[in-house]
Image (cartoon, rainbow over all chains, first blue to last red; front, side, top):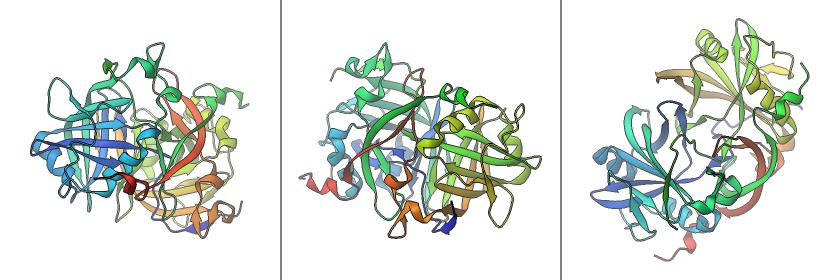
Length: 189
Length: 189
């Protein structure tokens, strides 16, 4: 276990992979995003961190809303594609079947097992990114992804992202290795 | 693909699992954390979101530093244990082999494949959590986890967390399903 100091330009991993949706000048737009997480319990607030230059930022600032759509492994090519081309150059509105929540301010993706709409609560400006805070307003899924009324990780088959070095990869979920707030009870104090 | 609205109290997943380290009154303390991510490219800024009541917050505010230590699947019991007991009640300083970066303000865990030390840059106060922003100062790993000088996801065997419903579980990484900024080129425009 000899530790060595390595290049510090890394990000945490493994990470969730999502498609960040926004309406830019009324047109549904989606970008591949992995810099996201939850930050508050009640209300349920999430953050996404978006490069200031991204077309998506324009839509979020225009509408005050964003969506996070979690694709399953069958959507890996389209997901990656959304990170390769900008909505500034390519109209991505026909790539997926789009639906809306009652507020109709942000596009959601029907093909994704879980879709979340968020209303912006605040921005934190950093040197190259905006950290956008949003309160979760609606979460959508399908009966086929639920077990006893709750989302089921194995049924959803979501995509995981890693980029520990210069190369990024998408992965599937592996084996269950333990139950949280439970398996730790085996540690003797 | 009939979408139904479900309970909105969810968090994104699959997520990374880390041990958040701090020195609380000079004693190394670690908590299990999954609400973390990167938020800026240059400088490399990460956020962790920590419940205001957690013992860890005291240490972060005292020192202005925190560490993120990414355990592998063999450490799943000790990782979960750190989320079951508070440093207020239990001394967790002997649970792992601790080492320090040159600044010596935050404990790092020798058993973890990757350890990151961060200096706090700002706090955002939310109703029940503090979002702590920190600039990555040092990253440590070992030769055995590198391939061509870069971290290797398969060699590290890190833990993934999901909590789509009331039950949280830990998982291993599954199969590689595609290369990022590459596999999307198969999508015809």
